[in-house]
Image (cartoon, rainbow over all chains, first blue to last red; front, top):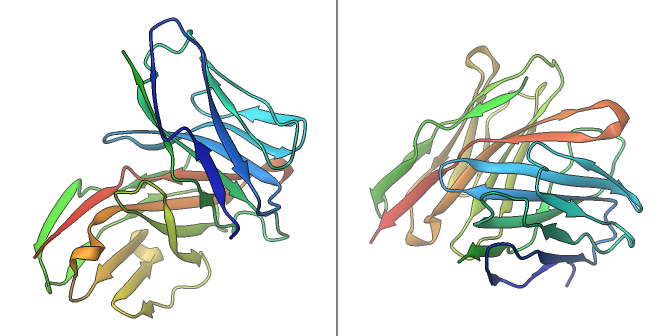
Length: 116
Length: 117
């Protein structure tokens, strides 16, 4: 079945450590996104990528980094520079179409990061 | 700037009751899309419906129905005869096209629905 796989589902980190969250899709989608979800704040965009080897900052990119070396993969690194990294992280993908703005996002099951 | 407001943070209903989730949006664009997503306890957001700004017809899908009114910038979601399986967080979202084809999506803060058996 096609979909998005995020791992790990739960992750604990000590302060000062970098962690990388994995996101893999087999939907052959061009665009991929990382969102952060906090209680009462909805989803906020961290980074997005429309094609391989290219990505752009979203609304809250500080303290995060990404790469897009393969179409299927879009890992997110939460660095020690992120002041409040405890959150639920969601990866999504989207197939490009001629009708810009109309595309449905397909989401992974998320990764919950807790900083101890 | 685009904005989506879901004023209801949490709603509790008894099973079989009808419930309406409100969504109000702001945008300067004339062409845009509105979405509803469901997030069950498992965490994965699931797409429910998409509406474009030129189509104000209401839609019904089983127990779900959506009321899109441009005059009030609202896109409300009604669940008829609610069931325990409807318990989830529901997100309303607004999408506009940006330069370069990037699709900017703004999500509301979500409404947590609890259906009590």
